[in-house]
Image 1 (cartoon, helix red, strand yellow):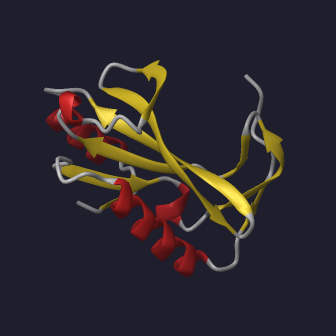
Image 2 (image 1 turned 90 degrees about the vertical axis):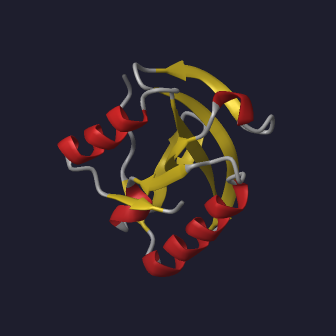
Image 3 (image 1 turned 60 degrees about the vertical axis):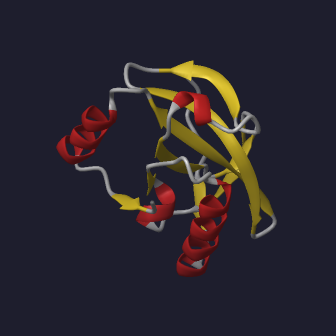
Length: 131
């Protein structure tokens, strides 16, 4: 697996965090019962890559979402990737500092909500509940 290139961290992390948070909230339908922002946005390590990595120019916006499967918006693109407790969707993109950043939605499988929340605690992931 190819290693990600060096990431150049943006200086305006708090402003970026607030923009990302507003954007993510705008794409979450009312049927979402819980959502957690995590990764580089929460850690304030959001930035662009020194060179393109696959089709990515910079940090993804990672969101863990709990929503009934039949309520997933049609505009969310299933990325044909899943693990034991989630499915991966692309929920949109936002331009920050002239770079396109994509929103990756980790949609928790039905019946796996408690498992996901326990895993977050167990792994000590730094998350921010947004809904």
